[in-house]
Image 1: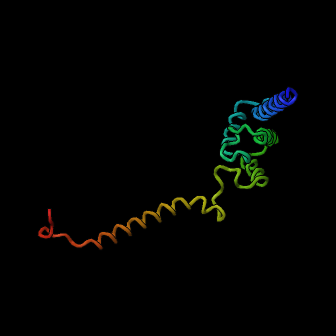
Image 2: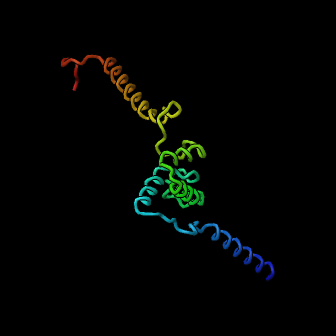
Image 3: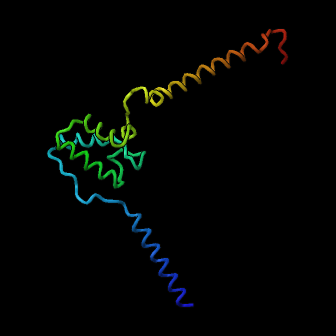
Length: 149
């Protein structure tokens, strides 16, 4: 009985230790090295415009996922190679698709994304106007003599 209890305690401790080991946030081993303040500002502006491919709801600048750390390093390396912001974005789009951009390009593939909400709003307004006009026509004309209080 004591052996079973000891085994259960050890198993519970190992499970807890394993769970807490995986729950620790991933930290970047070495800080990023910028050449000057202008490069740092450009880097932060660029990573704020890019989406983390794992988190999907955070920018590359805000995400703490390991792939976000790797992509931030990749972006800085591309900047050090002399690539422009447009070239860096194009590189990431070729690798991960348009999803990596918070503001994808307006083209035939993304029309629904850009204009869909406005079309739904306009369609809803048109339906509302049609319904109000139908109800107004369906009501009998009220006269002062016909009113009962």
